[in-house]
Image (cartoon, rainbow, N blue to C red):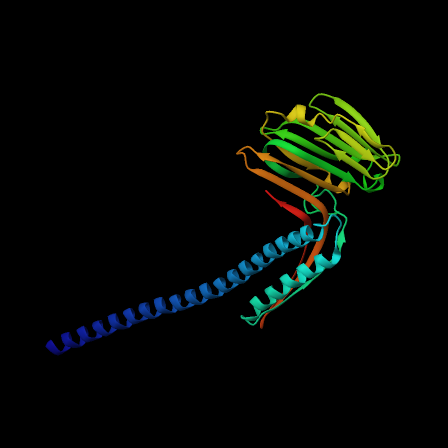
Length: 291
């Protein structure tokens, strides 16, 4: 009996040891698989993070290149190209240390729409700037009426009080080959004007300049209707027209802002490593602005 009891105990201990071994092996295997997956995910995230940094840096480089190129008053394409070439050379050297090649294909400037990214197929309805309590410069330039849609789908710029109450709006459309401008408040149309040829609208300065009649006074009512309000400036149907804008002022907290758009440039970036190739093409409005 004693011998049988000892054998049973040995079998029980052996079974317990095998069970513990299986559990330990399973846990270790799971840890190895988890660590492997984490390393793979980390590599992917790092790659995406680096690409995000490249896109942000390149956007700033194009903006700074454009500002340098117009420093003399007219656009100097050589300054623009040389600035971007210098930037690309520095970026290429940085990526070379990791065995990665990078190429940025320079693009020519194209006319900008009033959409969010400046493209004809961009987001048409968007907010230009928020939390504003003062706009001291608001200028729009329309190359000619042919770049605008007709009245049924006109471009609209509006100042909306925080809380969705519209303070001011301006509609711009093509009217028989002329640029037609209408200004309104919440209740009614306050005034209208037509302009021929290249049209310069100084909204805060209350005048219009065109290619035929020169400069004339036009009360946009913007300062009157937005004074002492906290508001945002929205763009509606931004794909319905091409042009230039510059707007500057102060946020509610007193900090200044300036946003300008003269044109759009398409940045084509290719990054090649040992195991992958990434190509990104995206529009950059210039000279841009910081919000």
